[in-house]
Length: 605
Image: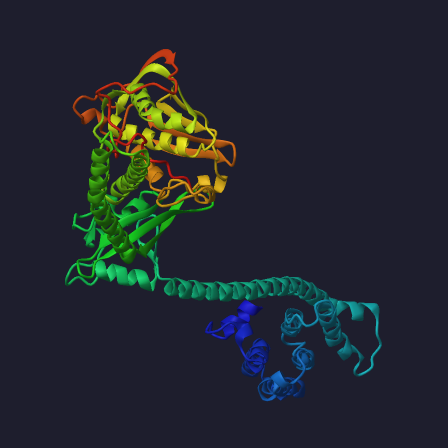
C-alpha cells in the first residue's frame, strides 16, 4: 500500500514524509479515479443509467468525500480522524453497486479500496479487518432490508462472497501492515540510535581534532599504503618547512630531511613514514628537517595500527621538535669539555709538583702528610675530570681484535688490587683460563675499571668482590658482584643515566659525578651487548654484562679480528686470582688515570 501510494506521489518523496492532508488525499484517489472512470463508462455505454439517481448520488458523494480530504485540516484533528473517510466511502460504493447491479458486475469489489485503507493505516491493528468485513457485509445486506422484503437464507448468503473475500484481503493487509509497522518502528529506533552515534562520533572527531591542534607535537596518521589519513596543524607546518623551494606539496621522498646537522641526506628507505609503512615501530629517531636557519631537529616515534585480526591497517607517527633540547645538550657537552680541559692542566701541574716535593727525604712528617692529602685529592679530581671528558666528548670508535677477555679481567683486578687492600676488599676472579673473542680490550678494560672501582668504593666495610666470566650460548657473560651497601630497585633502573646518583650514595658522602656507568653502558652497547644492574639495600650489587661471542658488528672487517660469527675460544680450566696479585710490567694501563692506583669510580644513583 505504501509503495502504491508512493508511486501515486510520483516517487518524488516517500509517502510517510508527506503532509497529513496529502496522505489522506492520495489514499482516497484510487476509489475516486475508479468511480469517475466507471461512471463515465456507464454513461457512455448504458444510456438508461444516466438518469439513475443512485449512480448520480454515488458520484456526488465520492467527489464530496474527495473534496473533504483536501479541505479538512487533518493535522489539527486527533490522529486517526481521517478513517472517517474510508468508512463513509462504503455509502457511495453501496449506491453505485445497487444502481448498476443488473447491468455491471463486480462493482462491490470497489469496497477493497476502503478496506485496504482501513487495514493498512495501522491505527486499528486488531479491529480494522473485522470492521472492513462488517462494513462490506452492511453494503450487501442493507439494500436487502430497504425497502422491507421477505428474507430467506438463500437471499442472505448469496452476496457473502464479497465480504468473505474482502475479509481475507483485509486480514492479509492487516498482517502485512502490522509487520511493516514493527519493522518501521525498529528502523526508526535504529535510525535514532545511528543518528545518536553519528553525533557522538562527530563530537569525538571535533574533540580529537581540537586536541591534536592544541598539542605542540606533529601527528601524522597514514594507511597501509602510506596515504595520509590525518595530519594536525603542527605537522602541516613541519611538512611545509621540509618542502623544497617553490614546491607547494610533495611526498616524503621529496622532503628535505637529513640525518645530521651537517646536511647528510637521509636515505629514502630510512625515512620515518616509509619505515612505518614497512610495519616498523620505533621511538626517538632524530631527523633534521628543512634548511638553516629555519632547520628543526625532530624526534620521531611510530606505532603500527592493527585491526581486530592483527593485520596492519596503517601507522601513527609523532614529530616532536627537540631543536632547543639538542642545542642545549650540545652547549652542555661543549661546556663540560672546555671546563674539563681547563681543569686538567692545573691539576697535572699540582700533581707533578707534589711528587717533586715528596721526593725530598728530609721533609718533616706533617709536611709529607699534607703533600699526601694534596696528591690524593688531586688524583680524585683528575678522575672526575677524565669522566667529564669522556662523557662530553664523542666516544672513540671501537678497535676490535681477537683478545683474551680473561686477561683483560685479570689486568683490571690487578690494577685495583692496592685500593682493594686498603679498603679491606677481597678481589676474586671466577673464570676459565682463556676466553678469546673479538672485542676492544682497551674499552672493555675501561668498563671493568669503572665497575671494580665502584664495587670497592661502595663496600665501606670490606667484603668480597667477585668477577665471574662464563660463556652462555652465543654470548659471553661477565658479572661484577659485591656485598656493599646496595641500592633500591627503582634506583637501579636509572643507575646508567648521566649524573644520576642514588640517595645512599649522596647520604654516604662518597664523591662522584654519576658519569662512570653512563660510559660503561655506552661502551657495552657499542659492542652489541647489554648491561643490567641488580641490587638491594644492604645486600650488595651485581652488574651483568652480556657480550656477543662473535664480537661487535663489523668486527670481521678489522685487521687482526676473525670474521664475525666465529665462536669465542674457551679453555675450561678455571683460575682464582687473590687480592694481592700485582700487575706485570707492560700490562694495559688503567684508562683515564695518570699514576692513580684506582680506576674511575662507578657512580650509583
